[in-house]
Every structure is written in structure tokens, then in C-alpha cells.
Length: 129
Image (cartoon, rainbow, N blue to C red; front, side, top):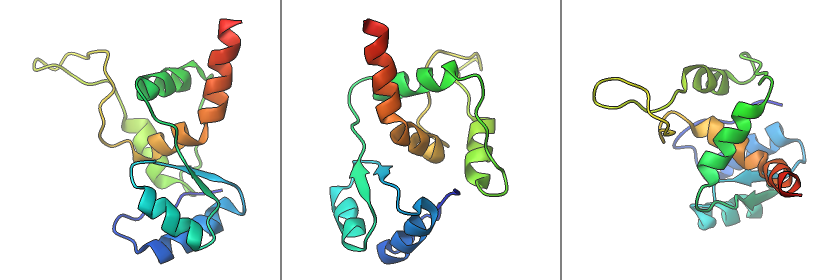
């Protein structure tokens, strides 16, 4: 696999890049722009919207923290390697860490959370049993 990260790309060009990276797999995308998802579908991308909701960022980030490790090929996914390596909790005015996830510098991290939604939901459901 790899990543297709290129801000400002025309949707038709993005569609080609996404199809090359996904190789026929379904992509779960940010659901904020349904028009873009619809257009990407019209260009042959197998894409569904993420099921975001209250607490989904925190739930996904906490799930990622439970993993023994996250392996990223820095050659194939340089943006993901950079983001995962630099991401940290928010800080207060004095520079102290606070238990809150900042919404910046996390585009590929969000993409991983979206892709793992079914696993995260399944893990939550089994924990309740």
C-alpha cells in the first residue's frame, strides 16, 4: 500500500491516485464532504463515508494507543510516518500536556482511524460482553 496525500488536487486526479493505492479495496473517507465522495465514486473509487460522531476521535485515538506497535514504511508513507512520529497531546498555556487530542497535523492519522472503524467498533462491542 501507500498514501495519496496531496492538498488541492483535482478530484479526478485524486481518484486515479486513490485507485492506485487502494488496489480495489474500499476506502473509508472523511464524511465532511459528501459531494466529494460522490464525485470520487463517479470516477470509480470504491469509497464510503466515515461514521463519525460524538467521541469518535477520542475512541479511535485511545484504540490506537492500545496497539503494541504501529508499523509505517517511511518510504511509502512519509506523511503518515511524520504525523505519527510528531503527534502528541495538547498543551496548556504553560506548556504542560493535557489529556486532549489536538485537531492539527493529523490527516493521515484520521485516515487510519477511519479505515479501522469496523475493528474499533467490534473491539468496543466485545468489551461490553
